[in-house]
Image 1 (tube, rainbow, N blue to C red):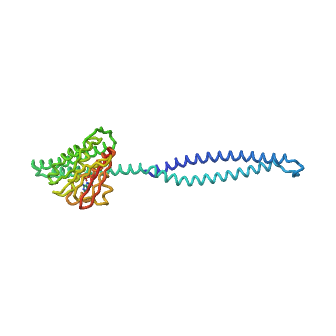
Image 2: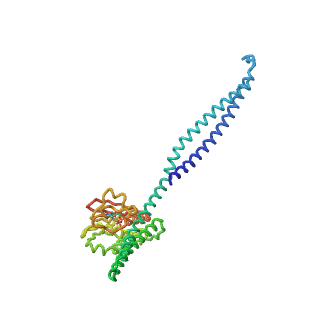
Image 3: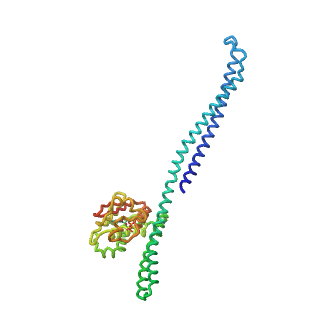
Length: 335
Ligand code: ADP
């Protein structure tokens, strides 16, 4: 699909260049012929007007004809040179234009590719619970001894899958909303309050794993959108809990630096392989260790939403991690 677009754009570029080059060549040709003609006229006039006693005039020389031949020869030479020049320009600029067309369309091609990947990943995630539900229902229908208790079990299991689908569709809608660069309402808000609100939302998960929080919060006020910032820190604290072993420690710090504020969430959990680090903010990306062994639930969308929220706040999100030792996610806001 993009090959024909590259070619079309190359043809447009080359057409523009050739139009300019041919127009200039015609102008150069016209001016040069005119100048040449005038020069030759001047030359023959001077020659004709030379006093006879200084230079004896050669007899029977047809100045008009010589002048015309000279003009024709020079015109032909010039024409040939301009044609060669235009052929060279055509070849050279065809190659350059193809390269430039590829460069111009690269971001669009990448965007389309990422959109296709996203659609494929999203369909895959939607298909999995639907397939599970279909199998359970089909097995149930085929079972002749299917009673009320089995029906209840089946409905409960279907409900679980529906909850997963709901979570996925809500997450996708959320991501789409932030990617559209929605205009969020910004107010002066306390970062400490935001962190506490986010923490309260995941507190029960932390308690279930007996995680200990050691926080150093400072009451710093920033300009931001409350709801999305709470969502951002829920994602980061929730991940810290999800990827930490039982009874481990999580540190949340707020620190001020000149005109910046940094919030860091540090865990001592499974950590992230350095080869995975460049991709963890990509949509649907999950590092292997979160898929294997004790499977941790998730769709690999949390960090991409987190990144969108941070960017909507003109901030920066960074991660430092070491496998088996833990991870530290830092969010920097400009004050
Ligand atoms: P998920 O739903 O899988 O948690 P995220 O987008 O939030 O999706 O994270 C992407 C991946 O980054 C995770 O699957 C996990 O492999 C890795 N990751 C994120 N946070 C942490 C963390 N605190 N410790 C270890 N790995 C993490």
